[in-house]
Amino acid sequence: MKELSLYILDIAQNSIKAGAKNISIKLEIDHKKDFMKVSIEDDGCGMDDELLKKAFDPFTTTRKERKVGLGLPFFKELALQCGGDAKIRSQKGVGTYVEGTFKLSSIDLIPIGDIPSTIISLIVSNSDVDVSFEIMSDGRKFSFNTLDIKKLLNGVKITEPSVLRWLIEYLEENINCVMEV
Amino acid sequence: MKSIEELEKIRKETLEKVNLRKDRNGIRITVGMATCGIAAGARPVMMAILDELGKRNITDVVVAETGCIGMCKYEPMVDVYVPGQEKVTYIKVDENKARQIVAEHVVNGHPIKEWTISSVE
Ligand SMILES: Nc1ncnc2c1ncn2[C@@H]1O[C@H](COP(=O)(O)OP(=O)(O)O)[C@@H](O)[C@H]1O
Ligand code: FES
Ligand SMILES: [Mg+2]
Image 1 (cartoon, each protein chain N blue to C red):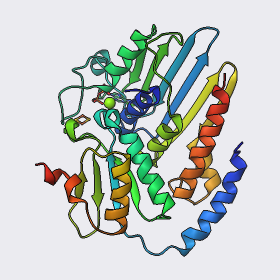
Image 2: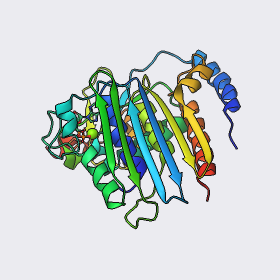
Image 3: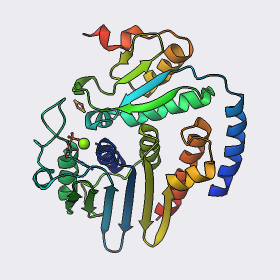
């Protein structure tokens, strides 16, 4: 995959599949420390210890449609290539936390890419799930939460095209502003 | 720069439209959003569908995701459900095809047979 935001979408789709009601995505960028951290946390069904131990193993999946699980091993491989690592914590019945770290200077690092599209895709994928997103870049910060948006919309659905169109622009402007170097 | 306060204006405008809206037509579009789907380009396909519906002011079509159906080589896949008709599954969809599926199938009611899974299987 060509963008980090696509990996984020894929990992967050695991959360949706795990029945999460809340997904929290965080992105931390620090140029001085040559460091980036991406994390995805959910309150889905979680994994038992046996599954968790082999979650990064490509032959691990609970899917019936195919025999290989792809998402988490891909993410770990990317992090390792970029001088970082990936970690996962999970508790059955509580939720799951996935984290990847990256060296910003790594030549293998791919662009962060289109975060607004990832967030909109998640909202549309399952509009009952609440998504929060936080970006911190060299001290600048932007955060977003569909719970707040739904409260403000007071009865108007978050998936209305007019709302989605506004959200895309809102996210693009604010995220670009935070990431400006 | 856009601020959250603007959302109130969007809410009011949308609410007026929602109140004028007739019954739902029950059309549903789903996009395969498992790993292979995403890797093959499902996200821009989903965004193109949303954009095309928005541009045409179509507010009564539900867009959602489907998971993996074990057919990586045909991703991105899009299903269109029209009430009273059989589900139509489109394969190897891109942004351009997605827009035409909205125009021809969803709006005009004519499925694009050459792009469906039944054209290859
Ligand atoms: N957030 C999560 N909550 C619960 N289980 C998860 C989560 N993420 C991954 N898993 C488990 O780990 C397995 C492997 O995940 P992944 O590598 O993304 O492959 P896949 O989604 O294709 O199965 C999944 O099938 C699922 O059982
Ligand atoms: S995601 Fe590849 S076969 Fe379903
Ligand atoms: Mg997965």
